Image (cartoon, rainbow over all chains, first blue to last red; front, side):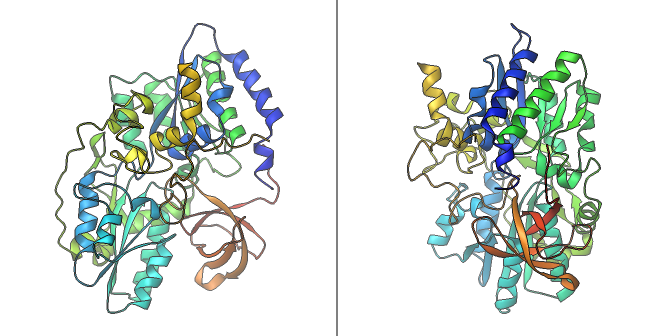
Length: 371
Length: 87
């Protein structure tokens, strides 16, 4: 398959693994964080961790957008879905995220009209087809996904659709990274930067990491060789005493980002003063809401939204997993009380979540470690 | 080829349309444009599995033609991919 096979070549993978081994300093322990949940998924799916020397440790970051949604925001969505005449639409991965009193899936089973969509355009179509209903799109995701919501809102406005609105929980990638880097219990040597977020924002926004925190960043693609090559690039920077942003995914990521997308985002959205991240707490200017120009499409203005903050379950250690302080299997409830079928924490719900990725693909590696 | 690992648990609900992470996160899929409606900045695209869907072309620079390969996330094309990619 074009684009794919050439980035999964096993021989090239072994060559890269050899180069990585030759680059690391014996006796030094390296911790590299992959920011993005998509990378976490690739690492476990293809066993990339098996190709690395024992002293190169991969730490899973906060880059799964559903894993960071706090329970209170789920409750808010359910409250809107239970309003008379409302059709709540959302991506499939939101359906099972636990709120304080059940998930979207539970609310749907109890009679709320909640529908899964593959794109905001599907939500817009539902609104056109149901002019007597209020159709709300529950928007989540980083800057990769936000342009899709923004373009759809522009279409809704141009069409004068009055029964369409958006409950916006879009988040931005740089503020949580800064919060992580300011965390005293975090020890990292470098970052694998998020590839598809960077197709929108570019690689430049990550320059503060080498600039202020002396850590290298390599923006990476998602195929196994992409990830291996990016790890090698980080280790080479460390070996050569360099510290900069490099773009391994240049075949897709323009260093300056997508100017059209950035323009659309700034027209439709504005930064929230603060937003709560599950496990990370409140982070300033880390999420988006609809701008004044799109206030008429803001579901949080159109409906009564409880907006109640709900504490995470005590047994859940998603916060420490998201910060890379503990590995998924070190959580007290991993694989026992918390499984993909019955998740307690959000990291187990999303396939991109570190816990679900480890549970689904990493158990073999864990068994080997134990042996 | 670097093969994907077998899944640890049969039947674990992962990446199924009903529950899976299809459009959110940092994932994007390659799709080929079949039909293009340039004035409305929309295209009908097909993925590797043969599924077709409507794709918003609003942030992709340049004219998109049928046959072009696009990187698509949540129903929006993020970029047009070159016909041949080199590392």
